Image (cartoon, rainbow, N blue to C red; front, side, top):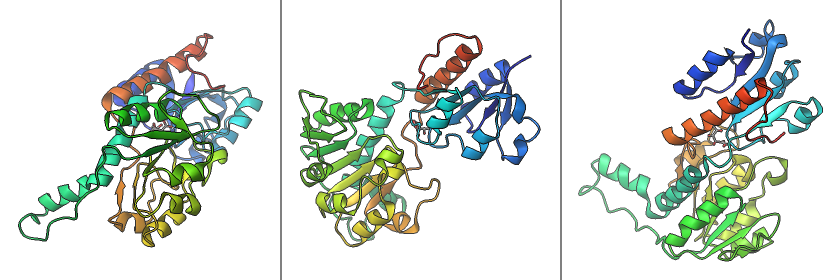
Length: 309
Ligand code: 8YV
């Protein structure tokens, strides 16, 4: 008999076909739906931001493994997973380039006003309405990075091609040759013109980027977030933009996805994306492949490829 798993967030059809071939896959709709099948479910496949709702975790007594199709573990109760001997896997490495590419894309979009320019041409405003305001130069601008893990480093590497001096903050100094470590986030913000968030989400980083940090970045400063919405105090961000205390923001992630507050949606100082930093065919295939392989390893009693727990 095939093991039974719960698929909480849809994956690529190619990946879902592989899951269907190996398991009885229950596609999650509600906790109520689980009532009659809960006792048989041994595995979960889910997205990084979606994770596993606590009510779902509580209702699955036979759960053995949670395979996250992403690198964030902040939406899974890791403490409880440890206590219940539930394995947790993620997809590190394979999405690094895409997330870093998205960060650079957002920097360019925000400072050069690419979405506004696109709309201007589409709307037939060119030659009809006043010219768009000038953008801001990207090359040479001082970049600060919050979180110098794989993604942070890949962003720094790309920034070098734009001749950007790079500084970063993290829980510790990685003694990186080309990038200056700044232990204190406020100092980093004060000395950066663009601040990119590449830190993990979760309790430890919640609202790390608050009103004070945004003010330190200043009216000419730009905030970019490709990590987790929870790292930014979204209400403080809205106020800082509204008061002109922050130059602009480019956001791929939000505090309460998919809800994006109206003031952000209507602001001309922001560029928005619907959490798509890892959303390319190549990367989602590679991520899905890791999910499939981790589940297969677990059910074959072999070592997990990319285990967190
Ligand atoms: C994905 C993510 O969009 O890696 C993560 O933690 O949030 C993103 O890469 C997500 O996991 C797919 O749903």
